[in-house]
Amino acid sequence: MSEASARRKPGDQPALLDTELDHLPAELRWREWMGRVEAVIFAASEPVPREVLARVVGKGCNLELIIDDIRAELAGRPYELVAVAGGWQHRTKKAFADVIRSAFGTAAGQGTKELSQAEALVLMCIAYFQPITRGELSSFFGKEVSRDLIGVLRAQDLIASGPRSPQPGAPYTYVTTKNFLSQFGLDTLRQLPDFEALEDAGLLSKEKLLAGDIIPGFSDCDQDDGPESDI
Image (cartoon, rainbow, N blue to C red; front, side, top):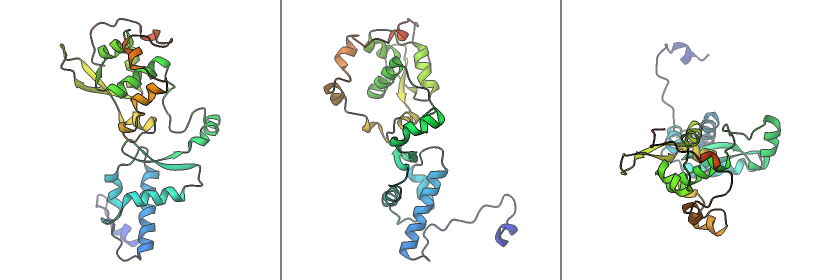
């Protein structure tokens, strides 16, 4: 224990962190900032936003360049620094997914169970058309989207309640969450594949959705749950 630590009393505020590091040569200052940024990201269990990283570097530090340099140093490693959910996070590279799945039974960073076909379709529609009500989702698919299915997506923190709809009865709408972005490796919703591109690739057809012409396996949504609920 240092002399300064020994003199510090319980409850004392820690000394202010020197972020500018003016006493260091430019190269060493940059290396120290890189180390601080990577340490904060490594220690965090969730993506770290810019405002948090800005607390440990100088005002003149370009965080984008810091991130670029860290990524360059990780080029040969099995993990990388990625932009997700409005922040940065260390993640293992996709090339090692099978290795990690063999070791632990699941891919790293994926604590949610695999979605059923119906759950994935509903989540996809919420992502593209949010905020959207359960009734509107049911209209898309031509079958009732059950409360249980919505509950599964909520339990996995993939969706949350959005603003009340102006429709009669003011039903709740649903929106995707930051965890949705994190789970699917997206920084923002703008990174969702273009809807028209999905249609061109034959992966999605808004016309078929509106007509209720959907692929098999959606029968678990086929139940009438009555009026819109708060879940």
